[in-house]
Image (tube, rainbow, N blue to C red):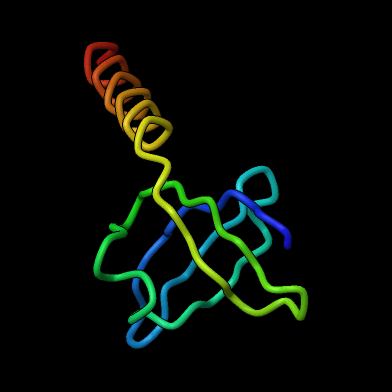
Length: 83
């Protein structure tokens, strides 16, 4: 059972688009219904895969998500103050 970190990039019609952390050119599509009840766009997820490569489950890494959002917010503020 393999586990990988992904960012939930967006919901696109009936799919959730996940971008692998550290390998942003790699994306996975998961049925939207499997994530939308607890995961928001921008959340960092720990995704587990079945041995056959199919989706098993995902959990939101809330602390890591919050840290990343704060880092992005701080960067935006820094850029605003530079002008």
